[in-house]
Structure formats: structure tokens, C-alpha cells
Length: 293
Image 1 (cartoon, rainbow, N blue to C red):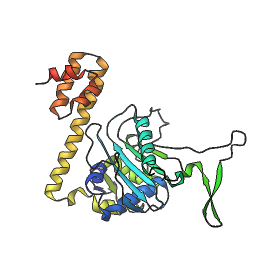
Image 2: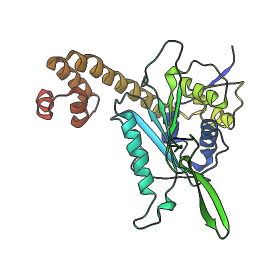
Image 3: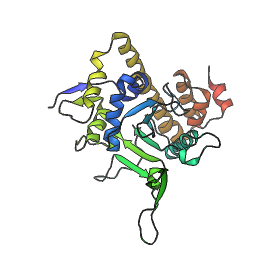
Image 4: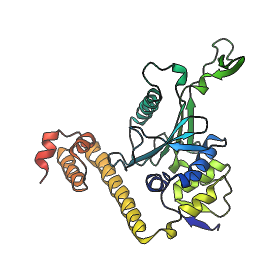
């Protein structure tokens, strides 16, 4: 059996460790493996989608970076099911695109956006023996008669032109369904997905900077106070996921108001706000408030 180094969860690392410039090498390794090109992270950016705090409403944490090509890359970890997840990441990428441009600025200054979603829930349908675990999509225009890709030339300097395709401008999306990964290592990206799934790195892993992740995210090297904070975070994730799963599987599916009220009380006891409880149970705000102690 190959020796493993046990690490902290990647979402906790994004919230507490990877925002330090000294640890950009871990982000660079992960992004290089996913995008299959050598990535240099220049800085972290801030936006409404780039929350430094764990989003308890949907078990979500994300980080937004700018690379050496001026692209904006958002990495998001989603721990709980959202049926409208595709619509939300489309909205997020669209908003990031708009936010890169000042009012009245030339449209050609819009920055490319890449959205990478790490999903810890079953989103796509599983088909026996035919499951994938990484999905990719972008807009690329092709001729309806010739199927040739659309391309155009743009002047970027005196007497200098560059060829562009639609993919060079429109957002790209990656969905990584961690639980669908079968632990078969074939590529650099597989090594990182293994790490995401197991919070561990095997001794035989060789992809770019994965040794840095092994060195900096090792659970046993954490100071006691950090270790306690991390353990509390993991418990919060587990408890909230269980509460939300119960709400979805019992309260919503059975359609019983009594059961939904019982779930609402459990949610409230875990610190969830009224708005979230209403959204997940289908109860009215007044009904929820009256049921609470």
C-alpha cells in the first residue's frame, strides 16, 4: 500500500492558508493540472463571489485569482446540492466579466473568466460503467456549413495582429465531481482530484507543486489552536450537510408540514437563519417563526 500524507480539507485551506502569497504555489500546481498549461498566480482578487468566510447557507467557499495572462479564475468548492447550480455559476461568471470593465471602457478590455467548481455532491446522472468526473464547457463558434472554427484578427500594436477565437473571450467552465472519481491515477489532474477526495497525497505523486501541498497542508504539522479551529470547521460542515440532507430527503420529499417543522427546528438549532430555513423547507416565514422557541 502506497504511503499517504494526511492533509487538511482543501476548502479550509482556501479559506485560511492559500490566500497567503507564500502559498500561491499550491494554487499554481492545482490550476496547472486542471487547465493543462503552466499557470502563474499574480494576485488574489475580491468580488461579491469571492467570499473570505465560509458560506454556511450553501456549504460553499471560493477564491478568485488573476494569472499572468490577466485571466480571472474562480475556484469554488460546493459541499451541498443546488438544483440551479449551473445557472448560478453562469450568473457568477457573467458578473465577473461585467465587473472587469469600467463604465464607458472599450469592450476589448474585458478579462477572460474561468470557473472551476469542485463538487462534493452527485450533480450529473450516474450511469453504470460510463461515469465521468470532470466536465468542461466553453463557447466556440463554428461555421454551420464548413464546421470550421470562427476566427478573427485584431490589431494589438502597430503592424502587429493577433488571431482570436471565441474561446479566447467567452468564459470557460470546469465541473469536478469528486465523488465520481474512482482513484485511478492517469494524469496530473487525477493526483489533485485524489487529494480533493481523500484529503491526502500519495508518496508517488509527481505533478507540479503537489509536494508543496504535502508540505504546507499536512494535518499533523498544525499548531494546537489551528488544529482545534480546523476540527470545529469540519464538524460544522458535517453537521450542516446532515441537517440539509435530512431536510431534503425527509421534510421535502414526504411533504409533511409536521416533519418540515421538525426539520426547521433542527436547522434553527444549528444556527441557520430564517431565510435559509424557508428556502429549504418550503414553509412560510411566519410558520417557521411561530414554530421556534
